Amino acid sequence: MAIMITDECINCGACEPECPNTAIYEGGIEWTWGGGTELKEVTLDDGTVVSGDEKQEPVSDEFYYIVTQKCTECTGFHEEPQCAAVCPVDCCVDDPDHRETEEELMAKKQFMHGE
Image 1 (tube, helix red, strand yellow):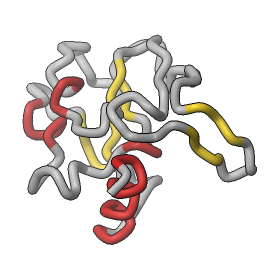
Image 2: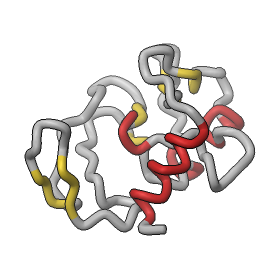
Image 3: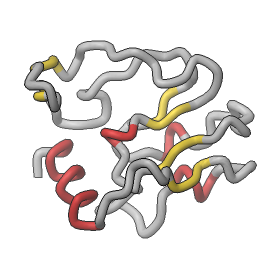
Image 4: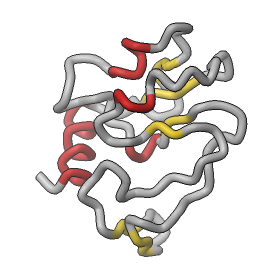
């Protein structure tokens, strides 16, 4: 499953630099598929093709957030999600709405990093 940041987030920013996929962004900041990945373009579920550099709407305007589609729970990089390991208030938690197997997470990592 992906990791999510709860509304208990104190906006300390400790999690952001720890993410190997650049899936964590400050509240209100637009995100891109290409940031921290090898992706030049992405085909979305509806068939739309977007550039890796195209800015996407922030998931949250109030606190740090994780882009579910880019989160691999650090699979293939670390033994545990690094955001959760460094969060001082334990607000980086499993997202029950986005469950993925280790194989799916590894495939996502390989897709994003061109491996």
